[in-house]
Amino acid sequence: MHTTTNYLLMNLAIADFLSLLFCPGFYDFALHKFHLGSGTLGDIFCKFIAGNVIVCVSFDASVLTLCAIAMERYLGIVKPFNKRWALTKKNVKFIILVIWVTAFFSSFPDTLWTKHNNEDTPWRYPCTRPWTVKNQTTWNVKAYILGHSVALIVLPSIFLCFCYISSSAALKSSAGEPDEDPASKRNMKRLLKLLILLALAFCILCLPFAVFFLYVTALAPSHLEQSFKPLFLAHRIVRFLIFSNSFVNPLLYAAQSKNYRKVLFQKLRFKNNTRNTENEA
Image (cartoon, rainbow, N blue to C red; front, side):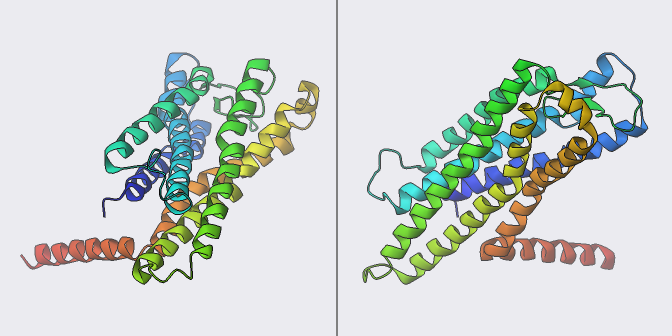
C-alpha cells in the first residue's frame, strides 16, 4: 500500500535502522579497548564512524518524521476537508527530503564539536561530544543542548500528544455515523492505535534524555565536577533509553500491522524454501 503514511513509516524505519547501526555505545566499547592516539584519525573516527554524524541526523529525522505522521493523521481525521495542507503521494517525497535536510543542519554543531578523547581513565568518554556531561561548561554548547532538547524532544512530545488526543476524540465522536464504511473505520482505528503507541514510546524513552540535559546545563561547572560519577552513570541510562526507542518502533509496527507480519512471514518462508532447494540440488 503506497499511502503517504506508509511512505513516512518507511522513512521512520530507515532512520531507526541507521540509529541502531551506528549506536555510539557499540563503538565506545571498542574505543575503550583500542586507543587511536591523538590527531586526525581519532577525530575522523568519532565524527564519521562512531555514530555521531549519522546517529544525530537519523535521530532528528526520526523525530521530524513522527511529527509529520502525526500532522498527516490529524489533518486526515480532524480536518478532512482542509486540502491545503494535506499530504499527497506527490508532495510526501518532498517532505521526506526536507526532513533529512533539516536533520542534517540541526545536527551540524554536534558534528563540528565532536573529537576523540585520548585520556586513559575508566570514567572517560572515548569521543567527546556536546551530549556528554564533561562538555557542559561553555555557553555555546549549553545553548545548543538547551535549544535542541526543547525543539526536538520536548516540543515534539507535546505536539504528538495534541495531535493524537485530538484525532482520537474526533474518531470517537464520529462513531455513530451510519454512512461510514466499517472496514475503513477499523483500519483507521488500527493505524491510529499504532501511531499512538509510537508516540508514547517516543515520549517515555526520549523525554528522560531531554530532562537530564536540561538539568545538567543548569548546573555550575564546580557542581559538575563534584557529581561527575553519578551524572556519568545517569547519562548512560538515559542514552540507553533514547536508543532503545529505535529498537522498540519496529517491534510495535510488527505487532500492530497484519500486512507487515504477512510480508515478513512470506519473505522468511521464501528464504527457507530457497535454502532447501539449494540443499537438494
